Image (tube, rainbow over all chains, first blue to last red; front, top):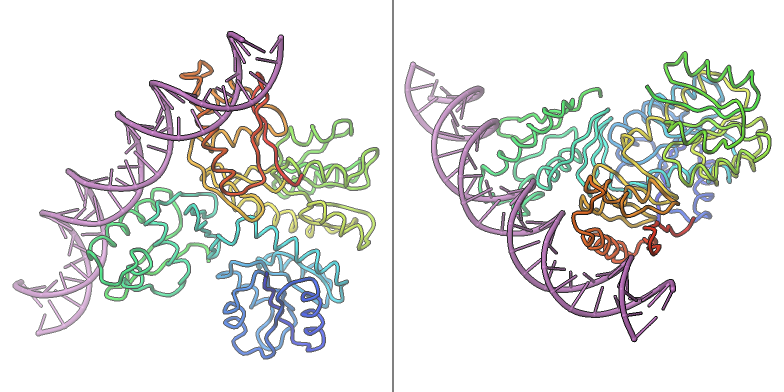
Length: 225
Length: 225
DNA sequence: ATAAACCTTACAATTGCTGTAAGTGGTAGT
DNA sequence: ACTACCACTTACAGCAATTGTAAGGTTTAT
């Protein structure tokens, strides 16, 4: 069952939205308080987020922007006002669709379904950070107008770096993710593969760099974020 | 430069739309007559089609539906009326977005850009027939909720079958597309690879069949079209 | 019934991925 | 400045996956 997260401060509207989606066969939920909304949303690993932009505290647009940087799910923006500039702001921030309240439940469902379908094409196998995306089935890495097909080992390294972005990933985490053991078979093998991966990235001219933090591990740095 | 095709019968509105997109840096064009619109549109290989649904003759919805079956580009529907049922029909037929006329140029551009971006993620490497899609870089074939990563030879065969769908593809065409020569190295090699490809398709449980037409060639048959 | 077209399985050569080895370069702390 | 440690790079060889060849079986049309 596909999970939809509703971020809406008006309790009645929130319950109504949740109910609408549940009737349509989705697993819908929404946080009641708005401290650490971003963490709450990402922790649920939703297939779609429906976001009211008139939130208390941090603006809904800010939330949309920061979710989009890490998110691998589509975002549907809800707003009370119907101004062109609102719509342009929303789409500019990477929202995947835009609707004005109040709106007919069937319209909302139709829009949501379209977004879910579009993102399903890639079968949830797409990881994203900014404009960078990785297909974890084929290890095809796409950034802006370039792409690169990684071999399995390099792909697994990239996968972990993207999943943990923007945090540092320790060597032992990389060992367990790629070779399934923290007891490094050979300390060197990770560096060999890092070397190959970096060479591929730079030869493709991608604005993606893997930086080493001495004694700590590796971090991904993506251009244009 | 990205190409946008406008399908609109009102000549003034058509010219205005074309001009709007050209100013925004796109290669915009639109057929003046509506005989064989479908062929005219597909022949241009656009990156996006903007479609007025109130067309003379064949309804715009019909056109949308038939384009979507073969199209590998997004479709933005324009309509004069703003009814929920119109919108639901449009989205149900596979349209990628929906706008009502008249609309502000910047809104139109913003929507168009969003669609182009979304489809660009796959870098024009996506071929589609109905719910079937093939990434021609990785030869990842996706259908409904299943996927399959093909090896190069089988991928090239699939690519040609999808491109030519729903036509029959002759053996000599397959030979030149896959091995670069009509003079078949060995008549058998095509059949061996067909066999492997079919085995993979059926083992994955995809509703995709390659049918042989004795003496003519092969055709793709996709379930759910 | 027969021939042509089509299909399938098994095998071997090639290709390319992966880890090992060995040596170089750079950084931090004494 | 010296030293120990960490990080990087290149070359090589074993192994696995893919591809074409070979050979024999099955279906279809006349």
